[in-house]
Length: 423
Image (tube, rainbow, N blue to C red):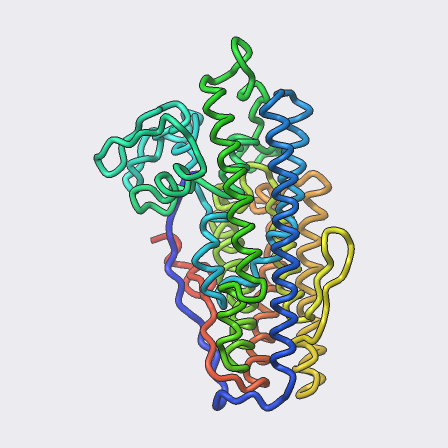
């Protein structure tokens, strides 16, 4: 996917009175938040392991059916992971790690062959069409690099953000997505990526060359995803870095971390960078899961994750429930009407996201919904954006009501200064 622009986001600052938490029970709310994190990352790990098994089976004996099974496993792996994203922004351990598994957009010419329409060079990225799968030696910052063996260590230690270019995404869900689907060359017309299974076939059946190295890359990226998620599960268990970080904060600061994640994902990241930017530009290249046309589901699960943090409840992939003391409980003790308002806003956003997903289920994918001239599709996406913005205003009121001091929420030029998008 071509990187069109980078936006700089002004922060939203929500001020409140002196940082003191009047209500008791804050630590139990934080402990439940940590317990939910363990469950969500464990589910992300278990589904990533299932994806890894499906990929191994496909690589061992490539076929159309086994490629379809690997793709389905990828879809299933995205569900719990996207619901973890509300743990970003307020937790430095997650923020420092997240780019390894979910960075986007990516310049896919770094990884594999691309269509001629992609172009051959970029002023911002010398590795724009490096195609490491086809080239056992590449050059990074003018120095030759041995790429003869594609291992997890090579991907994470050498290729990821090579040349200090963020678009050089070599690892994580989206690199795997590209290797399973290939480029989506349909623009805003119907259809996702359509990589043939024969891109992994052996001998004379191999299409587009380098099938053995393509399989090597896919296997390495999948193994790396599993190990990265194992690391994050451990980080959230007792004594892990993420859990210890929250344990080291006072009650107000720990609750602030929770609300920072909710508000920043809701406003600057999801409503702004992932949704409004693409809608302004009517550009499918600004679609989150752009190769697979899964973006409606990723956005929906992000919204579910935000709600989960507030309600203190998560439904696991096996159907069991993890729940406990919540932000909702704390707010209701101080201002019942505000708690009802917050829950209603979260529900309204989910309804708007579900309407967007229903259009996708009916055959109009997210990239078609944001297409220029699709008034109904644009309005459906805008309604979800409006819901995210509206619920952020209620999050701001919750911050003030809990009396936990000043919180900085991520902003977005797409929302706050849309003219800058075209500069």
